[in-house]
Image (cartoon, rainbow, N blue to C red):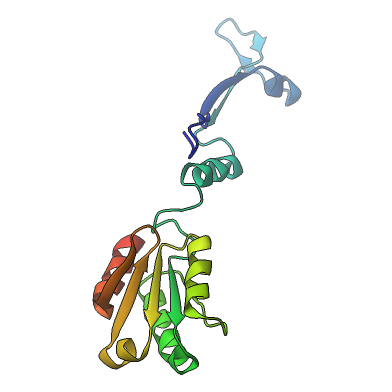
Length: 163
């Protein structure tokens, strides 16, 4: 079922009488006559495009952390935090995460709102205190502000998702 309760069919098993004839396929029977075989088609997820569409519909675009194309949005509060944001984004990538740095010249609330609209699972905010103490302020897409975390604790969450 998708996010609004519709049921979709993904997997099928079908008997195909047409393709063996079009390919001129035959086999010899026990009594040495030539017969055209039946062909079985099996599609576990249907087409990959259809499956991905159903998956996106099911999660209403809010994909789980392990599946999200961008798992973390790193948000520097001011220009002076951009270098620290790039450094931490590198650590996230090294931990197996997919990250985007939101360093446009916009207010922090706008950056957070954009990350929410993109349904990015985690947002980490870096300001003076976080840079000095090697912390990150963590926001989760549905739970909101989770407070300040040690960087390694956050990286462990990302590593676990990559497994």
